[in-house]
Image (cartoon, rainbow, N blue to C red; front, side, top):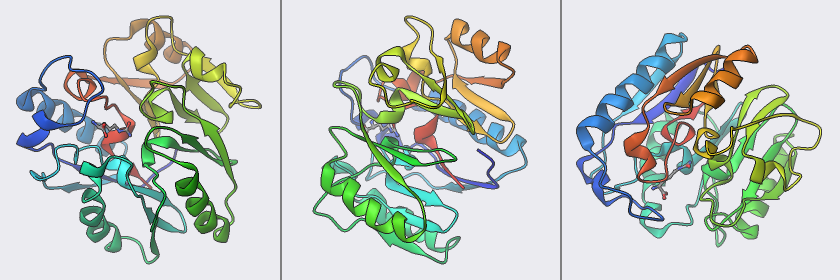
Length: 255
Ligand code: CIR
């Protein structure tokens, strides 16, 4: 959770066409831009450099950069999204990653894998199979990261949940914030787990970024739990991204 850099991409006007499981309202671009600016400023507040990429009108979900790559100390790996409309975002990210990484690999397929399904902890890389991430995608990622000395554990995202990290996030070297439904699957044995409050499952997607925990605003009981556990929480309005099933982790690549 200690990072010196992040990559973000400004939301495009086409964001109104972003993918969503359920239509709960049209995202408001002006509000999303304001929230995005708050998010970027918060990352920068920790002293990190933020590489801000321009909007991509051709890719409505382009703001959710996390899904396009996995950034590790040894190199970056370009993902192969399970959502066909998001495939082209990967080439756009490749250009940015080649400027900062000497070693950039790529999931060639036929499998699929998205960054939102990958949680990197101090001891392992957890990958949740989901509607976007399949066994072949996980296997191809494993072949790359085992070269770099990482271990991978395949787990399962609960049905109906978009990504593994929709329901969990890393708070520190040994602590994970998780919904009760995901923890119940047994995937966090050996970790200290803090649960989101009942009815606040959407608070599970946070990011620990240096000294701060960025979390979506509007989940007071979970925020209080984190505060009491000693974390420095910054709440960021996420109303617009939430309409597209997106949250704090989706909005950046961190390394
Ligand atoms: C999608 O369905 O792909 C986007 N609307 C949301 C992506 C959220 N990304 C993430 O959780 N890492």
